[in-house]
Length: 161
Image (cartoon, rainbow, N blue to C red; front, side, top):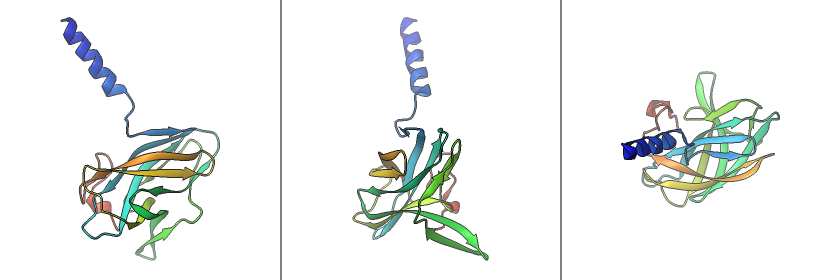
């Protein structure tokens, strides 16, 4: 009986503890950075995550770096005259106070370009994010299968790259 109680307590602690894949930098909370596996010979990969600003002032995601990429940019995809267009956000992406901004397929996202190697499902890609006010934080993108998406992040149909 005592062992069952200890097991139940341990399970409840694991279930309620923050994910090791989530990060906090000052007032910013970065949730579940992920990417898709790249096909052989690919030179680019997308990166996705949620950023919540719990502070009273805006901050801005300016860029970052990834161990497998020569360039790391913040991009936006949007419809313009019935055509989906992708463009770099040279001034970064504002994270308003009290707001959550989701970088996801078909919307805001990270572009890792000039890949030195591909990313396979199940791997993690070491990277960093740089914010205007909060500074720099090291993260890892969890690599999902080609065409995949982690639970709660939509499916392959959303991806327009």
